[in-house]
Image (cartoon, rainbow, N blue to C red; front, side, top):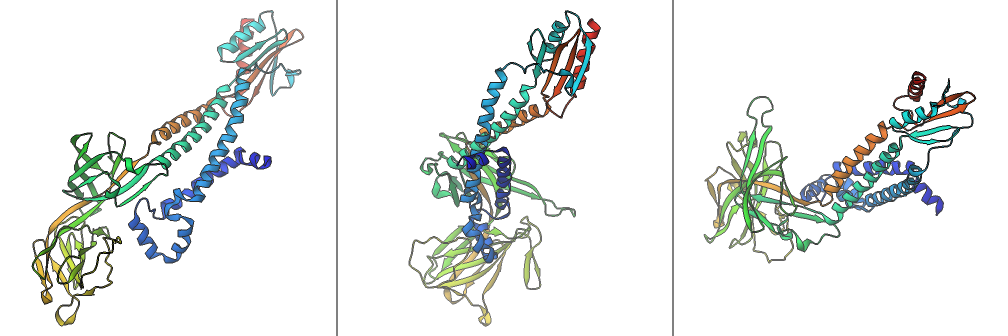
Length: 487
């Protein structure tokens, strides 16, 4: 057990664990994470079924909460503490201890110069050394001086800051939360767990006590490059919204790099955007079975977007539509595509499905995909699958008296991320203090200088305890020149 503890708390193994932690974090950037986008994880699983069989049991879809990542994190924390505590104890002893004893053979020091002495030589040498920041210990035989204790202090501060960074990250991980929600223009969001599309919280976070606030997205602005160079590149993403918190409502503007932070510390970030076409669906009995916007998800850089309109309450048969929204539509033969991400010539292409009314099962369904169980395609002319092309304000009537669908227009939607990371301030301050400590440890030069009586003269010797900075020869030479001038 002692051997294992010694190995764990060695600085070499602490560095190894730090490198392992950095390497372990890489999959979190390469593989979709469930706490960021459940839809991306589902798409990845569908596209890479073989890798999914390997990643799923390893927890690769939630790397930072996986047991193996937590194990490395905990071992690093213990290792750093085990390394630092003995060094702090030793430093506390060294910093109050007197300088080292005078050497028996000062002439054997790496730097040593002999000079003539006067009765005032030692006193003058002590005054010079104190002016230079040395701690001195004078005796009848000579003077011992040391400086550079701040180097080890800076080193310890740097390592303590690493521990504080780990504490801050753990604080955010256990007590923080993160969730996303898609909000269409003109609609709102209330900070309740039921309002989130996906939500993850730390083990110690009480999700029944989220900060009470709500917001409404009034309008989303998007601008794209229209010139020939970088045509279609994003130039502006900005959302206008109103936030109600603590009984007061105020306007706010949200940009990609300009998050909004509520009074209680919840940060709201703009993650993505897209289009939500508006539809009105009438069933075979003439009743409005569905009306409103439907979120379509973009599938390429020109915002070709796909979505599903589900109409389970239509009668006599339930209906569903698979659609593609093209912001700037062009027709190449029988294939339509979007050539620009902004909505200049918007169109919707729909396929229709029909089926007998189904009983409510209470099982949640993906709103972005259609489960064709119990449904069959609606057929058009020549018994071919019905396919409709619509511009805003147009519609078409389904055959066999099934009803009709109308494309009323479109709105934009925004994907908002809501998060609370209470340890961020501690982490930020720890990083800044750590940089300061590292700077001190790199630039402070620990060294010793001795002035020792030797016959009718003195030997001025120096010992540089660091390979960096000014050489100790320079300080020994300066001290000797100072003493010779005053002599």
